[in-house]
Amino acid sequence: MLKTRRAFLSCGLIGAVVLAAPLAVRAGAWPQRPVKFIVPFGPGAGADIGARVFAERLQALWGQPVVVENRPGGDSIVAITAFLSANDDHTFLFAPAGNFTVHPFMYSKLSYDPSDIVPVARVSNTILAVGVKTDAPFATIKEFTAAAKQAPGKYNCAMVQGITEFTFWGYEAAEGLKITQVPYRDINASAVDLGEGRIQIAMLSYAMLRSHVEAGRVRLIVVNNATRAPFAPDVPTAREAGYPSLEVEGLIGLFGILALANEFKEKIAADIKVVSAAPVIAERLTATGQVVNYGGPQEFADAIAAQRAKIAATAKAIDFKPKQRHRSTDAKDARR
Image (cartoon, rainbow, N blue to C red):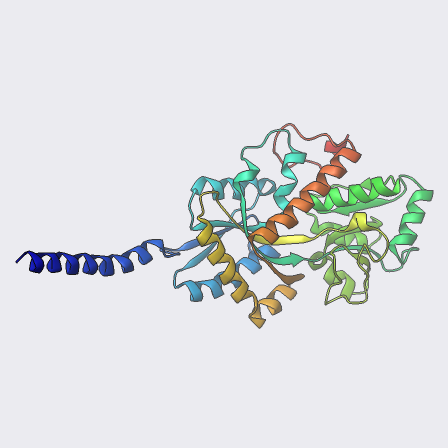
C-alpha cells in the first residue's frame, strides 16, 4: 500500500512538472501582446518609413500586432518621454541615436535620464552628405576648406540640428574655419537655398538633397558615413577626402527600457537580423536614403558610445555652452 502511494505521488509529481513546463514557457514567451514602436518624427520621415517596414515584417514573425506611433516635436524629447513613461517591455523607441546622444551636451537640464534608453538593435544608417551648388567655385571639400580659410565669415552653411551640427562644428574647429550657420525652422528649405546659391554649403541627409542633385542644382562633395553610399558610389567619404572630422554615422535603431529582460533583448535583436535580410527592407530603405546596417545590442551600444565620445571632444574644443532647458531654439545661439 505504501509503495502504491509513493508511486502515485511520484507519478503525480512528474505529471505536475510536465504540465507546468509549457506554462513556464508561455510565461517567458515574448511578445505576449501588441508591440509599439514610438517614432520621434511625423509620417513619411525616413525613420518612420523604416519603422513601418520593420513593423510589418516583425508582426508576421511575432504573431502580434506591431503598431507605429508618431510623436514628433521637442527635439525628440516628446517621443522619448512617451517611451520612457510607458515603462513597458512591449513599447520601444525607433529612432536615430544621434537625435538624443547630443542632449546631455545641448541642455544643462534634461527631463529624462539618457542611461534609461537601452540599445536593442541597430537597423540602418541614414546617409549624410555635404553638398554645394553645382556651379560653385569649389568642386571638392578640400577646395571649399581652402576657400573658407582665406575668407573667414564669408560663407554660410546649414545642417540638421543635433549630431550633424556637432560634426560640422568639429570640422570647423579642426580646420580653423569661421563659417556662418543659418538657422532654419524647416531644414528641408536649406536644400532649396543651397541649389539657388543663398547658402554655400550644407550637411544634410541624402534624402533631403537627392531631388536637387538629380535636378542638377546641387553637387555632393563627400558623404559623411564610414563607407561610400551605394546610390552615390563616385562620391568619396569624408575620411577618404582627408577630413575624418566630418565622419559621422546616421545610426537608426530600436531602443528598449532598462527593465527589458536580456533574453528578450537578444531575441528581438535576432529577429530583427532575420528580417533585415529580406530584399524588400533594403529596397524601401534605399528609397529614403538609408542602407541596411544591422548590429546587435552590444555593437549598437559601442557605436553610440563612440559617437558620444566624439561629441564630447567637439563640445570641449569649441567651448560649447548648453542651453538652460530642453526646448528647441536656434542652435547657433547656444554656441555664443
